[in-house]
Image (cartoon, rainbow, N blue to C red; front, side, top):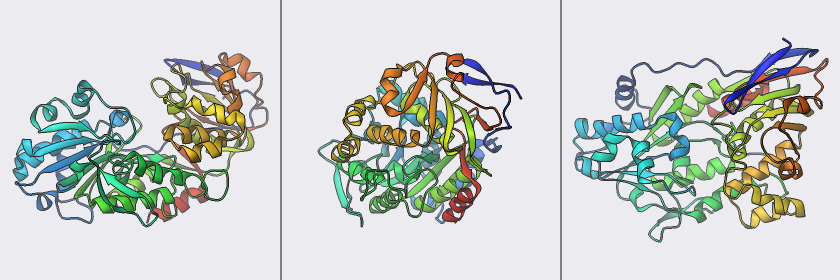
Length: 435
């Protein structure tokens, strides 16, 4: 192999890797696509429930029901299809009137959604028939205190999650901080106060040193303080039923894991780890990683997931070529704001004083970059990212003048957000951790 093609924005970029010692392309494992989603849904909420009574035994016709759903950042998982199936099941099978069903969008600290976005999120049928579709507001004055976790996080939750049957639908993925997304993450940060979010998420930072806590990260479960605290917070809220969605790299539904809120979600994490976690025998000298093009490389905040996954496959002191067009720049409102404390040498101190998720993604990006040399093909101003340790180029030929692949082991990752490379020992440890 002498040339490779990788997606960049809405086009492809061709790169020469002539002279490499070895070249291996890293792709996720093949995953099934559910052929009959309606039949699979019915099976999973009745006969295939995990550690739980069937849904029809947990909800009665006279109950008020709240369905917690993900916001627009997860729409690519097509959860709207499942929402409609659930609402119709509650109404037709259990007898719950549509007007006793509310949908709560688990925004966490994200921006509010418009009425049109809500309609898109849940689908026309659900939007037109149920009582209401409302955004969670993490700063609302009527949030309800339900208790404090063993780690000391005060849990204030949306009132629609109290005194009603609570069904949580979310997609499960690997997650930079919490180990895995979905499940309890729909509670924290999804439907709690800003204070609760900060008290939980600041545990991403090591309590004794200016760095990330080594117990957090993609695939890390049982010792992860963020995950443990989220689970404890979710237990205080006491969800009635969990529906966990896993999709393949084509965004087709691949697995539904329904039942006990915690244990069904844990089963979905195992599915994700086995399919998206990719065991590798060694790290490579040079890694080429693309986000997979538009829309996954619209901004740096979105694109860094692919960078983090690529860095996992790179040797200490190695080189990574990162393709992310980033026409929208940083993306998150406060992402590049953190360059100021970085330049002053007080990034860690500043983040601890005023923790934000965007701030931590910036922090973790700077941390990961230190593993080796990162050359990036993008529209980002080189001066804007230079202090982070990123070398940004707008021309691939200029970039490649600084990359030596001769007699080197090379990995190619065409879809960086879809595969999580893990040295085999780590991969197997994460599997054991979920058992």
